[in-house]
Amino acid sequence: MTLPPFQALLDDHAEAIHRFLVGLVGPAEAEDCFQETFLAALRSYTRLREGSNLRAWLFTVARSKAMDAHRRSRRAPVPVAEPPEPRRSGNGGHGVEPVDGDLWAAVAALPEKQRAAVVLRFTCDLSHREIGRVLDCSDDAARRSVHEGVKRLREVWA
Amino acid sequence: MSDRIEELLRTGGGDGVGEAVERFLAKAEDGQLLDVAYARAESPFGDLLVAATPRGLVRVGFLHTMDEDAVLDELATRISPRVLRSPARLDDVRRQLDEYFDGRRRRFELRTDRALIHGFARKVLAQTARIPYGSFLTYGEVAAEAGNPRAHRAAGSALARNPIPIVIPCHRVLRSGGVIGNYGGGPEMKARLLALEGAKVAGTS
Image 1 (cartoon, rainbow over the protein chains, first blue to last red):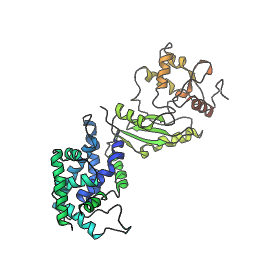
Image 2 (spheres, rainbow over the protein chains, first blue to last red):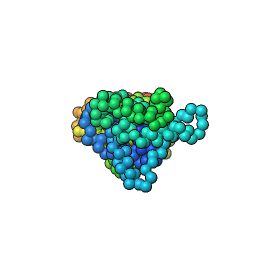
Image 3 (cartoon, one colour):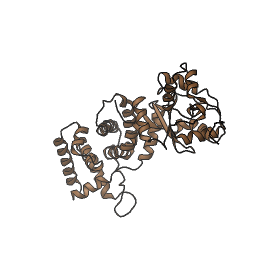
Image 4 (cartoon, each protein chain N blue to C red):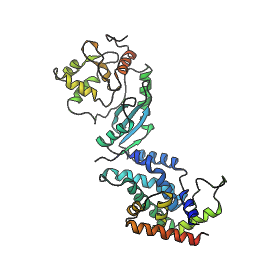
Protein backbone atom coordinates (compact mmCIF):
# COMPACT_ATOMS: atom_id res chain seq x y z
CA MET A 1 0.00 0.00 0.00
CA THR A 2 1.50 3.31 -1.02
CA LEU A 3 -1.30 5.82 -0.72
CA PRO A 4 -0.10 9.42 -0.48
CA PRO A 5 -0.85 11.46 2.66
CA PHE A 6 -4.48 12.58 2.46
CA GLN A 7 -3.33 16.19 2.78
CA ALA A 8 -1.74 15.84 -0.67
CA LEU A 9 -5.15 14.96 -2.17
CA LEU A 10 -6.67 17.95 -0.45
CA ASP A 11 -3.91 20.29 -1.65
CA ASP A 12 -4.06 18.99 -5.21
CA HIS A 13 -7.79 18.56 -5.77
CA ALA A 14 -9.84 20.65 -3.30
CA GLU A 15 -10.26 23.52 -5.72
CA ALA A 16 -11.30 21.37 -8.69
CA ILE A 17 -13.77 19.40 -6.55
CA HIS A 18 -15.23 22.64 -5.22
CA ARG A 19 -15.66 24.02 -8.75
CA PHE A 20 -17.27 20.76 -9.85
CA LEU A 21 -19.77 20.92 -7.01
CA VAL A 22 -20.59 24.58 -7.58
CA GLY A 23 -21.27 23.74 -11.21
CA LEU A 24 -23.44 20.75 -10.29
CA VAL A 25 -25.50 22.04 -7.37
CA GLY A 26 -24.82 25.79 -7.10
CA PRO A 27 -22.72 27.62 -4.51
CA ALA A 28 -25.19 27.33 -1.62
CA GLU A 29 -25.32 23.51 -1.69
CA ALA A 30 -21.70 23.10 -2.81
CA GLU A 31 -20.29 23.88 0.64
CA ASP A 32 -22.14 20.99 2.33
CA CYS A 33 -21.41 18.64 -0.54
CA PHE A 34 -17.74 19.53 -0.33
CA GLN A 35 -17.64 18.62 3.37
CA GLU A 36 -19.51 15.37 2.76
CA THR A 37 -17.25 14.47 -0.16
CA PHE A 38 -13.97 14.86 1.69
CA LEU A 39 -15.26 13.32 4.92
CA ALA A 40 -16.52 10.27 3.02
CA ALA A 41 -13.25 10.07 1.10
CA LEU A 42 -11.20 10.31 4.28
CA ARG A 43 -13.34 7.64 5.94
CA SER A 44 -12.89 5.11 3.16
CA TYR A 45 -9.36 6.17 2.16
CA THR A 46 -7.51 3.45 4.05
CA ARG A 47 -9.59 0.77 2.29
CA LEU A 48 -8.69 2.00 -1.16
CA ARG A 49 -6.74 -0.27 -3.44
CA GLU A 50 -3.30 0.79 -4.51
CA GLY A 51 -3.07 2.25 -8.00
CA SER A 52 -6.56 3.70 -8.01
CA ASN A 53 -6.90 6.93 -9.92
CA LEU A 54 -7.33 9.15 -6.88
CA ARG A 55 -8.50 12.21 -8.74
CA ALA A 56 -11.23 10.33 -10.63
CA TRP A 57 -12.19 8.61 -7.37
CA LEU A 58 -12.66 11.96 -5.60
CA PHE A 59 -14.84 13.25 -8.44
CA THR A 60 -16.92 10.06 -8.27
CA VAL A 61 -17.51 10.59 -4.55
CA ALA A 62 -18.35 14.27 -5.16
CA ARG A 63 -20.83 13.37 -7.88
CA SER A 64 -22.67 10.95 -5.63
CA LYS A 65 -22.83 13.59 -2.85
CA ALA A 66 -24.20 16.09 -5.38
CA MET A 67 -26.89 13.60 -6.44
CA ASP A 68 -27.85 13.09 -2.78
CA ALA A 69 -28.13 16.86 -2.35
CA HIS A 70 -30.20 17.12 -5.50
CA ARG A 71 -32.63 14.46 -4.26
CA ARG A 72 -32.92 16.31 -0.95
CA SER A 73 -33.55 19.68 -2.59
CA ARG A 74 -36.22 18.27 -4.89
CA ARG A 75 -38.30 17.91 -1.76
CA ALA A 76 -37.65 21.55 -0.90
CA PRO A 77 -40.13 24.17 -2.15
CA VAL A 78 -38.01 26.11 -4.68
CA PRO A 79 -35.32 23.89 -6.17
CA VAL A 80 -33.60 26.55 -8.29
CA ALA A 81 -29.83 26.34 -8.46
CA GLU A 82 -28.12 29.67 -7.97
CA PRO A 83 -25.54 30.63 -10.54
CA PRO A 84 -21.95 30.56 -9.34
CA GLU A 85 -19.98 33.78 -9.41
CA PRO A 86 -17.55 33.88 -12.32
CA ARG A 87 -14.02 34.18 -11.01
CA ARG A 88 -12.93 36.72 -13.57
CA SER A 89 -15.58 39.01 -14.86
CA GLY A 90 -14.89 40.36 -18.33
CA ASN A 91 -15.01 44.09 -17.66
CA GLY A 92 -13.98 44.07 -14.03
CA GLY A 93 -17.58 44.61 -13.03
CA HIS A 94 -19.02 43.29 -9.78
CA GLY A 95 -21.49 40.50 -9.49
CA VAL A 96 -22.77 38.25 -12.21
CA GLU A 97 -23.76 39.60 -15.56
CA PRO A 98 -27.33 38.48 -16.13
CA VAL A 99 -26.35 36.66 -19.28
CA ASP A 100 -23.79 34.50 -17.43
CA GLY A 101 -26.36 33.73 -14.77
CA ASP A 102 -28.67 32.47 -17.47
CA LEU A 103 -25.95 30.13 -18.64
CA TRP A 104 -25.55 28.55 -15.19
CA ALA A 105 -29.30 28.26 -14.87
CA ALA A 106 -29.21 26.44 -18.21
CA VAL A 107 -26.43 24.20 -16.90
CA ALA A 108 -28.56 23.44 -13.85
CA ALA A 109 -31.43 22.43 -16.13
CA LEU A 110 -29.35 19.85 -18.04
CA PRO A 111 -29.89 16.14 -17.36
CA GLU A 112 -27.54 15.11 -14.53
CA LYS A 113 -25.09 13.14 -16.64
CA GLN A 114 -24.71 15.87 -19.25
CA ARG A 115 -24.35 18.49 -16.55
CA ALA A 116 -21.62 16.50 -14.81
CA ALA A 117 -19.88 15.85 -18.14
CA VAL A 118 -19.93 19.50 -19.21
CA VAL A 119 -18.70 20.78 -15.85
CA LEU A 120 -15.96 18.13 -15.66
CA ARG A 121 -14.83 18.92 -19.19
CA PHE A 122 -14.75 22.71 -19.08
CA THR A 123 -14.89 23.88 -15.47
CA CYS A 124 -12.55 21.17 -14.14
CA ASP A 125 -10.57 20.51 -17.34
CA LEU A 126 -10.75 16.70 -17.25
CA SER A 127 -10.03 14.58 -20.33
CA HIS A 128 -12.83 12.52 -21.87
CA ARG A 129 -11.08 9.44 -20.58
CA GLU A 130 -11.16 10.72 -16.98
CA ILE A 131 -14.77 11.85 -17.38
CA GLY A 132 -15.59 8.30 -18.48
CA ARG A 133 -14.04 6.99 -15.28
CA VAL A 134 -16.03 9.41 -13.11
CA LEU A 135 -19.32 8.77 -14.90
CA ASP A 136 -18.62 5.05 -15.19
CA CYS A 137 -18.96 4.96 -18.97
CA SER A 138 -16.71 4.68 -22.03
CA ASP A 139 -14.57 7.54 -23.37
CA ASP A 140 -16.94 7.79 -26.32
CA ALA A 141 -20.03 7.94 -24.13
CA ALA A 142 -18.33 10.67 -22.07
CA ARG A 143 -17.52 12.58 -25.25
CA ARG A 144 -21.16 12.27 -26.37
CA SER A 145 -22.47 13.54 -23.04
CA VAL A 146 -20.20 16.59 -23.24
CA HIS A 147 -21.24 17.20 -26.84
CA GLU A 148 -24.96 16.84 -26.15
CA GLY A 149 -24.69 19.05 -23.08
CA VAL A 150 -22.96 21.84 -24.97
CA LYS A 151 -25.41 21.49 -27.85
CA ARG A 152 -28.33 21.84 -25.46
CA LEU A 153 -26.73 24.90 -23.84
CA ARG A 154 -26.28 26.47 -27.26
CA GLU A 155 -29.99 25.97 -27.96
CA VAL A 156 -31.24 27.56 -24.77
CA TRP A 157 -28.57 30.16 -24.17
CA ALA A 158 -28.66 32.78 -26.88
CA MET B 1 -20.90 31.20 -29.70
CA SER B 2 -20.10 27.81 -28.23
CA ASP B 3 -16.59 29.19 -27.56
CA ARG B 4 -18.22 31.82 -25.38
CA ILE B 5 -20.14 29.11 -23.56
CA GLU B 6 -16.98 27.10 -22.98
CA GLU B 7 -15.14 30.18 -21.82
CA LEU B 8 -17.85 30.98 -19.26
CA LEU B 9 -17.95 27.37 -18.07
CA ARG B 10 -14.21 27.50 -17.43
CA THR B 11 -14.57 30.44 -15.04
CA GLY B 12 -17.18 28.80 -12.83
CA GLY B 13 -16.77 28.22 -9.09
CA GLY B 14 -13.55 28.31 -7.10
CA ASP B 15 -14.55 31.02 -4.62
CA GLY B 16 -14.62 30.06 -0.97
CA VAL B 17 -12.60 26.87 -1.30
CA GLY B 18 -10.10 28.00 1.36
CA GLU B 19 -12.83 28.34 3.98
CA ALA B 20 -14.37 25.04 2.89
CA VAL B 21 -11.02 23.30 3.41
CA GLU B 22 -10.64 24.82 6.89
CA ARG B 23 -14.10 23.64 7.88
CA PHE B 24 -13.35 20.19 6.54
CA LEU B 25 -10.15 19.94 8.61
CA ALA B 26 -12.08 20.91 11.75
CA LYS B 27 -14.72 18.27 11.02
CA ALA B 28 -12.13 15.59 10.32
CA GLU B 29 -10.64 16.36 13.70
CA ASP B 30 -14.01 16.27 15.49
CA GLY B 31 -14.94 13.02 13.76
CA GLN B 32 -11.69 11.39 14.90
CA LEU B 33 -10.82 10.62 11.31
CA LEU B 34 -7.36 12.06 11.64
CA ASP B 35 -4.79 9.36 12.27
CA VAL B 36 -1.75 11.62 11.93
CA ALA B 37 -1.88 15.40 12.46
CA TYR B 38 1.11 17.50 11.51
CA ALA B 39 2.35 21.07 11.55
CA ARG B 40 5.53 23.03 11.16
CA ALA B 41 7.39 24.34 14.16
CA GLU B 42 10.21 26.85 14.21
CA SER B 43 13.64 26.30 15.64
CA PRO B 44 16.92 28.26 15.62
CA PHE B 45 18.22 25.64 13.16
CA GLY B 46 15.36 25.78 10.66
CA ASP B 47 11.79 24.57 10.46
CA LEU B 48 10.74 21.31 12.07
CA LEU B 49 7.90 19.07 11.02
CA VAL B 50 6.04 17.76 14.06
CA ALA B 51 3.44 15.00 13.82
CA ALA B 52 1.15 13.37 16.36
CA THR B 53 -1.26 10.46 16.47
CA PRO B 54 -4.10 10.36 19.02
CA ARG B 55 -1.59 8.59 21.28
CA GLY B 56 1.02 11.31 21.21
CA LEU B 57 3.97 12.86 19.42
CA VAL B 58 5.21 10.40 16.81
CA ARG B 59 7.69 12.32 14.66
CA VAL B 60 9.97 15.35 14.71
CA GLY B 61 11.68 15.95 11.36
CA PHE B 62 14.43 18.45 10.62
CA LEU B 63 13.42 20.24 7.45
CA HIS B 64 16.90 21.70 7.03
CA THR B 65 18.20 18.20 6.35
CA MET B 66 15.17 16.42 4.90
CA ASP B 67 12.26 17.01 2.61
CA GLU B 68 8.78 17.57 4.08
CA ASP B 69 7.14 15.30 1.48
CA ALA B 70 9.53 12.49 2.35
CA VAL B 71 8.62 12.76 6.04
CA LEU B 72 4.88 12.81 5.26
CA ASP B 73 5.16 9.89 2.84
CA GLU B 74 6.92 7.88 5.52
CA LEU B 75 4.12 8.63 8.01
CA ALA B 76 1.49 7.70 5.41
CA THR B 77 3.23 4.41 4.65
CA ARG B 78 4.24 3.37 8.13
CA ILE B 79 1.32 4.64 10.24
CA SER B 80 -1.72 5.61 8.18
CA PRO B 81 -2.37 7.57 4.99
CA ARG B 82 -4.97 9.63 6.87
CA VAL B 83 -2.40 12.39 7.39
CA LEU B 84 -3.65 15.96 7.61
CA ARG B 85 -2.25 19.36 8.52
CA SER B 86 -3.66 20.36 11.90
CA PRO B 87 -1.65 23.01 13.74
CA ALA B 88 -4.12 23.10 16.66
CA ARG B 89 -3.33 19.49 17.57
CA LEU B 90 0.34 20.42 17.86
CA ASP B 91 0.08 23.69 19.76
CA ASP B 92 1.34 22.17 22.99
CA VAL B 93 4.27 20.47 21.27
CA ARG B 94 5.25 23.67 19.51
CA ARG B 95 5.01 25.73 22.68
CA GLN B 96 7.23 23.33 24.62
CA LEU B 97 9.77 23.24 21.79
CA ASP B 98 9.87 27.05 21.73
CA GLU B 99 10.50 27.10 25.47
CA TYR B 100 13.24 24.50 25.12
CA PHE B 101 15.06 26.40 22.37
CA ASP B 102 14.76 29.54 24.51
CA GLY B 103 16.45 27.78 27.43
CA ARG B 104 13.26 28.04 29.50
CA ARG B 105 12.40 24.33 29.51
CA ARG B 106 14.55 21.44 30.71
CA ARG B 107 12.00 18.63 30.44
CA PHE B 108 9.26 17.90 27.95
CA GLU B 109 5.88 17.01 29.33
CA LEU B 110 4.46 15.31 26.27
CA ARG B 111 2.96 11.95 25.50
CA THR B 112 4.87 10.15 22.77
CA ASP B 113 3.74 7.45 20.37
CA ARG B 114 6.66 5.11 19.71
CA ALA B 115 4.97 3.35 16.79
CA LEU B 116 7.96 4.06 14.55
CA ILE B 117 10.46 2.47 16.95
CA HIS B 118 11.00 -1.30 16.95
CA GLY B 119 13.07 -3.98 18.61
CA PHE B 120 16.31 -3.12 20.39
CA ALA B 121 15.85 0.54 19.39
CA ARG B 122 12.93 0.73 21.84
CA LYS B 123 15.21 -0.10 24.73
CA VAL B 124 17.97 2.21 23.50
CA LEU B 125 15.63 5.16 23.05
CA ALA B 126 13.84 4.47 26.34
CA GLN B 127 17.23 4.75 28.09
CA THR B 128 18.10 7.82 26.04
CA ALA B 129 14.89 9.48 27.17
CA ARG B 130 16.15 9.22 30.77
CA ILE B 131 19.41 11.13 30.22
CA PRO B 132 18.97 14.41 32.12
CA TYR B 133 19.20 17.85 30.56
CA GLY B 134 22.79 19.04 30.28
CA SER B 135 24.41 15.62 30.69
CA PHE B 136 25.37 12.90 28.22
CA LEU B 137 26.37 9.26 27.79
CA THR B 138 28.46 7.40 25.22
CA TYR B 139 26.96 4.97 22.70
CA GLY B 140 28.53 2.11 24.67
CA GLU B 141 26.98 3.31 27.92
CA VAL B 142 23.54 3.58 26.39
CA ALA B 143 23.92 0.10 24.87
CA ALA B 144 24.86 -1.22 28.31
CA GLU B 145 21.85 0.42 29.96
CA ALA B 146 19.66 -1.04 27.23
CA GLY B 147 20.95 -4.46 28.28
CA ASN B 148 23.68 -5.22 25.75
CA PRO B 149 27.06 -3.53 26.46
CA ARG B 150 28.59 -4.82 23.22
CA ALA B 151 25.83 -3.47 21.02
CA HIS B 152 27.21 0.05 20.71
CA ARG B 153 26.90 -0.08 16.91
CA ALA B 154 23.26 -1.18 17.12
CA ALA B 155 22.73 1.59 19.68
CA GLY B 156 24.30 4.04 17.24
CA SER B 157 21.99 3.03 14.43
CA ALA B 158 18.93 3.12 16.72
CA LEU B 159 19.86 6.67 17.72
CA ALA B 160 20.50 7.66 14.11
CA ARG B 161 16.95 6.59 13.28
CA ASN B 162 15.32 8.24 16.30
CA PRO B 163 11.95 9.43 14.94
CA ILE B 164 11.44 11.93 17.78
CA PRO B 165 14.74 13.83 18.17
CA ILE B 166 14.99 16.72 20.67
CA VAL B 167 12.14 15.24 22.73
CA ILE B 168 13.93 11.88 22.91
CA PRO B 169 17.31 13.56 23.36
CA CYS B 170 19.62 11.51 21.15
CA HIS B 171 21.89 14.57 20.99
CA ARG B 172 22.92 13.60 24.53
CA VAL B 173 24.68 10.47 23.30
CA LEU B 174 28.27 10.98 22.14
CA ARG B 175 31.15 8.90 20.94
CA SER B 176 33.70 8.01 23.59
CA GLY B 177 36.13 10.77 24.49
CA GLY B 178 33.44 13.41 24.10
CA VAL B 179 33.50 13.28 20.30
CA ILE B 180 30.22 14.75 19.10
CA GLY B 181 29.49 12.13 16.45
CA ASN B 182 26.68 12.17 13.91
CA TYR B 183 23.27 13.77 14.19
CA GLY B 184 20.19 13.90 11.98
CA GLY B 185 20.24 17.69 12.06
CA GLY B 186 24.00 17.79 11.49
CA PRO B 187 26.89 17.65 14.01
CA GLU B 188 26.88 21.42 14.40
CA MET B 189 23.27 21.36 15.59
CA LYS B 190 24.14 18.61 18.06
CA ALA B 191 27.02 20.67 19.49
CA ARG B 192 24.80 23.74 19.76
CA LEU B 193 22.04 21.81 21.55
CA LEU B 194 24.59 20.52 24.07
CA ALA B 195 25.94 24.06 24.50
CA LEU B 196 22.38 25.37 24.99
CA GLU B 197 21.96 22.83 27.79
CA GLY B 198 25.30 23.82 29.31
CA ALA B 199 26.75 20.32 28.89
CA LYS B 200 30.49 20.12 29.60
CA VAL B 201 31.68 18.32 26.51
CA ALA B 202 35.38 18.08 25.67
CA GLY B 203 36.06 19.81 22.38
CA THR B 204 33.07 22.15 22.53
CA SER B 205 33.41 25.65 23.83
